[in-house]
Length: 445
Ligand SMILES: Cc1ncc(COP(=O)(O)O)c(C=O)c1O
Image (cartoon, rainbow, N blue to C red):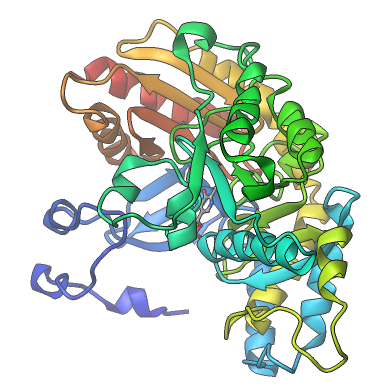
């Protein structure tokens, strides 16, 4: 089949109109990395080069690329019901997908609100938290607490609770009444941890300090990524998330896990909440729910949250929130086919099985030039490099470019090189990724 991208041979002067997100546009357009097709673990560029995808697209294609059952489900759905207003209408697939998500979510989770991205999921969860306190008569609980080095997408809610300087500094004061816990990343205490760091559970106690400062009656919710992904794969210290749960519960504060990256198997269980045995009040998700094929995000919440809204007069809208494309039929079809594929091929179990293989290979880079830490847990790993003076991120970005030239896609995040592959990865792929990175690092200034 000829696809549109096969027919396009773009000239450099045709690259101007598209303003690329989170990309150095001028650098990219001078030497584009143009992907034309994909299959399993591999991409093909527009000039026919094969690339091993060590990053599952962008933390999302958990089942690998262009998997037939998902592709066919999307095609069929597009020809059956292209669109359905999610306001005052619905289609069966939305309910089916919600039920399937609840089946694999932690026990206390009972309802799913759909949107289209991780950013929308985060802002939705924050709004639900504020509204929930209000309808229960605690309208003074408006403060939101995030964490330094957290990434929660790019909406105003997400950047407000997020803790990434470049994503915040250009955009004014954002939401007021937001505070942050400190990051758990500490190389002095935790460098080369084998698995989860031993040190740092006590950092959750900082929430007590914020409660003492602001009073619990002003705090609506705490949001954290169970594993901070975008700032370089920072795993929670042993006991940290449990402690955060205890403290939030004690003070009537909602706990939101942002599982846009960790959801749908990345850490070897359906959600990080399952893996760590901690039940938050809400979980945000996106990416892996459709294995990256059709945009979709959502919020899973406990019955306690959902049921509190189901009280007003019959016929009244309970939550004034939603998106034109909430529960889009194509996304729901993709989601159902994806969850079925995860089940049929036992892909979460496979992620768990391949985790020690990835960890062993990555930990073998200890002592390689520039490396100052190695982190691995589940099917995700990071190689932290010493930064060049005054140029944080430059070395890892160069490593990303050089690995690409050698046919391997990884991602750079500050001075971390991140590996987060599809769960169908085999040992030979891991070997190729890690040996390519070793060569790249040895040749790098
Ligand atoms: C933890 C987390 N939350 C939210 C987002 C935002 O998702 P999206 O880019 O789909 O808006 C991301 C994206 O990587 C993420 O990693």
